[in-house]
Image 1 (spheres, rainbow, N blue to C red):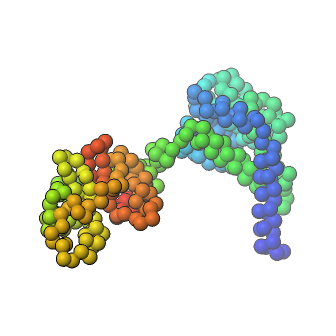
Image 2: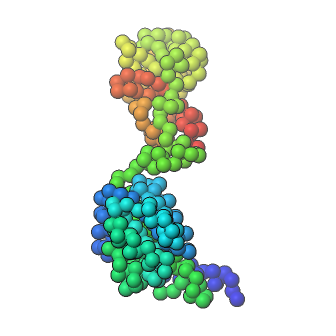
Image 3: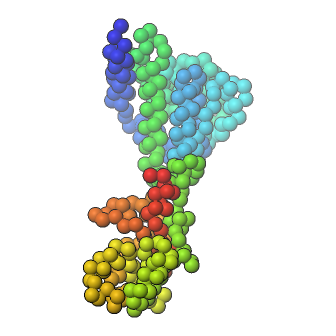
Length: 320
């Protein structure tokens, strides 16, 4: 037996199965997506065995991307868990054969409750397919299993069908990274998506500021004292320019007049800034996606300077 060759053949079989399912997608997917978008209740995924395992993943994906969803094991549904279902809900019942006893046994109760049923099955003419309000066809020609018994291709097709449905709903809901972050507050991903500029900026007494008429000595004293690598040039309470360490280095080339220069002579007036309520990842993109990167960014609350954010702090926060 050529193990690598056999492994590749399983990939090929499952890819073929996915292509079969993909090519059968029709307007029913549009109807199902629009129905779920307008659903007032939740999505209840049910299944048993490997279909149940895939169902748990689909429910988790939907729940984390803006669709209220839970998983209910079909066997547990027979013993009281049907109480989870409300008339405004939709049940996605997964069974490749469409004739799993546990799934079929709970269908009458689901219908009595009043919830709609979407069948995810490879047999549209099965009892499940006939009982359903909508059908997502996951039928494949071959399972990949040498015995053609263990669900492999069909399990993959079910998983991808669930992902496709979740992805469509992400688009239809205009689900954004900040929405995703609300459901993923833990770890580096949560920090990256939840952290805002105002959480990282230096403000108040830490802000390095000078006036446009201040001489270079005074500018350098402020820059050295505040240690942010920049000084904000202010006039009448408004920021009119910014001086960075790079500006100072360039001014040093003017040796003879350097110590007679004023802030207004070396400041940058067309500076880049960001609003305090923007996401930290947005600030990092503003600083990095330029011909020449910048290391500090003034932060504004409407027209007023309220802080300075450094690229070092952003990189630390978002985990890049």
